[in-house]
Length: 485
Image 1 (tube, rainbow, N blue to C red):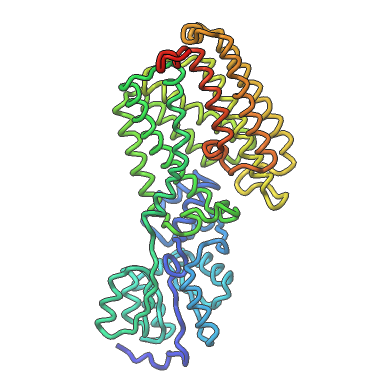
Image 2 (cartoon, one colour; image 1 turned 120 degrees about the vertical axis):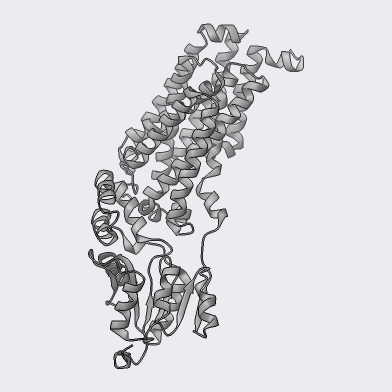
C-alpha cells in the first residue's frame, strides 16, 4: 500500500457517520415518509423506479421531501463529543451514505465543517467507497471515525481511532487488535416501541361494546366476541397510529408535547416502526377473520380510511373532523358486526354528531393551548377558526340530543325500555356531559385528546354513569339483576 503520510493533517479530524451515529434517525427513511406526506404518488413511483439504485433514490427523495434537517434528532453524546473536539481545534466532518444536499445542510445547522462526504446521486458513499474517499483525503489512519453498524467496519479498519455508537460487535474485535475504541451506549427499547402503539388510546375501543349495552345482550358468548373485536381494533388502530406518527415527524417535532413521541424524538428507529406496523396489521386482520367476513370488512375499511386520513384528509379543514367522527362511528358498527347485534340507525345518528362535537373540541383545545397565531403544524386551523369550531361543536351536541330523543320512539326502544319517560331524563346528564366537554375545550382545560381526557375526568365519568344508571333502571335491569325497585 502506498505511503499516504504526506496527506495526514497535523490534527486528525473526527469524521462522523450520520444515520444512527450523529443522528438518532435515518435520513433515507425520513425522506421516504416526509415524501409520502407531501406527494405520495411521486414518492412511491420514485421508490419503485430506483429501488436498485440507492444513490439516485436518495437524491430524488431528498428533492421531494425537502426535509427540515435542523429538526432531526441528534445523538446528544455524539454532539457533545463533536463540540469538545471543535473546542480543541479539531475539524469535525460528516461522512454519510445519505444525499449530499441533506448532509451539507445538516453540517451547517450544527456548525460543523463545510467539507462533507456523501452520496451524490451517482455514487452511494457507503462501506468501502466511503473508506476510499476518506483515505484519499486524509491518508491511512489519518482520521478518527465514528459509526454504528457492521458496514462501518470497512472505515474503522483504516481509521486511527474508533467511536462506536450502540451495541456493535465490531468494537470488541477492534479492541482485541489494540485499536483505541470509544463506546457510546445507544439504541431503542421495547418500552418505547410499546409507547408508540399508544395503548392509552385503546380505551376508545370500548365503543365496540355500545351495541352490546344498547341491545342489553350481556351473555358470555356475546361478551367474548366483543372482546375479540376490541383486540382486533386495538391492533388496527395502533398500526395506523404508527403510520400517522411516521407521516407527522416534522409537525410533531414542532409541537410542544408531541416532539417527545418515540419516532419524532429518535427513541425508536423508523425501520422498527415500519416492521411493527406490518405485525400489528396482520394481528388485526387475523383476529378479525375469526369473527367473520363482515367484521373483516369493517376493520379493513377502518384501516383504509385511517390511512387516507393520515396521508391527506387530516390536512383538510372540516373534512378531518368529519372523518374522525366517522372513524369513531365505525367502532360501533364494528361492535355490531362482531356480536351480530342489530344497531338502530338512530344510534348511529346519535354517535356521529357526538364525535363530530368532540373532534371540534380536540381542535379547540389545540388552538387554545397554541403559543402563537400561526396555523397548527400539519393542520389547516388557526385561532380565527375557534368561533366556527365552537358553533359546529354546539350543533353536534344539539343533533345528538335530538337523535337520542327520537330513538326513544323506535320499536327497539319501546321493546327494551319499560319506562319511556326515563329515557328523556337520561338526556339531562348526557347533555351536561357534552356541554361540559365543549366548554372545557374552549377554555383549553383538556388533554389534547378529548376521549383520553373523558376517561380520566371523574366528574364526566360520574355524569355518564348517571345517564347509564337511569337507562338501566328504565329497562328494568336493576330490578332483574339486584331485585331493587
